[in-house]
Image 1: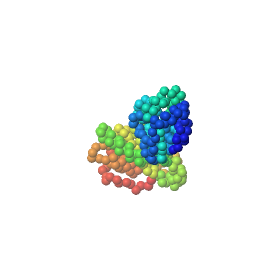
Image 2: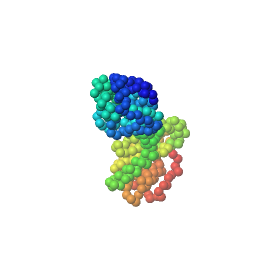
Image 3: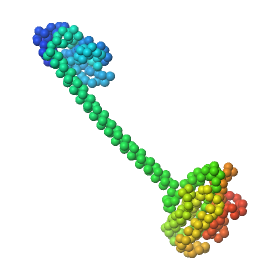
Length: 358
């Protein structure tokens, strides 16, 4: 680099602008030049700072904690603070391309610059501008962090709302999956689950568990006479009547299939179950739903079977269902529109069902 070009560049540097021509030449003579190849480090973060630098040509990359923060170009100064305060360097300086640097040792700085008020004022302005830039960067970084925090908070609120909606929908799906779509009382699946749960509890407490099996008398004839829409309306009214007859929240009325309904009665013995079944029969009869095709009465009637057990290891929940089914068969055989109890049944093979018309 030509000497005249070098001096002209240094004079444009605020720190050296106040030096007279002779003083500047004397100052440069007290310094040394360092040539760097691309990628070569001039100094490392954490090194002791005994010199400062002015870029004469090329470019220096400034890195902190392995992250590039700036690029030094011809005329830029580095290392002043480390030199003045005798502290470790705050950044690593590495050549981006072929770079020429003027190294200002501590002796040259103190002999030519530290006693020059204009040079010190220029240095103070450099520090002030850097501090302001650092403060602006800090404010900008804080604003970005605040924006990110607000965005994260918004997304968290959205996730929380989505989770609540999913939980609500899951509860709805669970409720829907446990209901009979036509009658809106419990379905067979819900009944089976409740029976297993109450069976375990009754076995633990040695408490009685009762079932009431209900079948609409001659329902096929009803459908044939009045149509399936009227048949569906009939099923809904019978289901509502059975459910409304139950006395306790733990009791459960369910549609078992077709025109068959079943009621699960917890902590209920035979007498209580029979009384409740008779009440169901009377309330259905009291609906006065016309049924001209019935051989029992001019209005709709039901037959019911009652069974009660205290669960124990020798029997299963299915056995209780079978007992109630057999009692229902006995009620239908006995003339329908009546309640029969499993206690009054003769011993017959489990699972026997009548071929009587519905």
